[in-house]
Image (tube, rainbow, N blue to C red; front, side, top):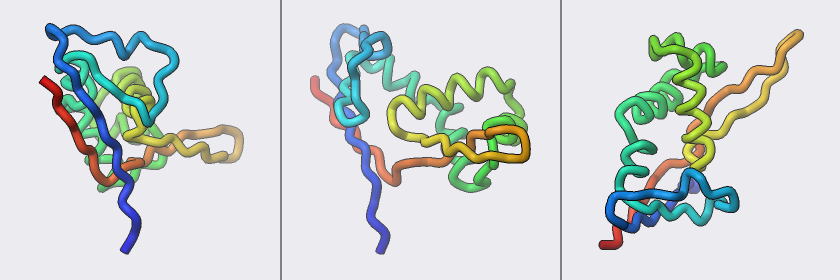
Length: 117
């Protein structure tokens, strides 16, 4: 049996505010969200769709992913960067003849969420 990749997130409700997205010294292992709004941004329906398409259809590039999703490339790349920042997605560089493309892949199997109230 393959080893599961698990990411744990701690959410602290703090009057609906969040500051994590502006902090610079956050590592993938120390994700602590301040407020539920930040979790909503990270786990929106569109980001869930992105994760599903990456896992099932395995697109070869972010451009191909945006075509499958029928969404603008800029919107998809912004979502991918956020998912990558929080360790849910990895971008694998692949060299083609004259270009370097980034193949997205889901980097976790489970997401555990702890809620402190």
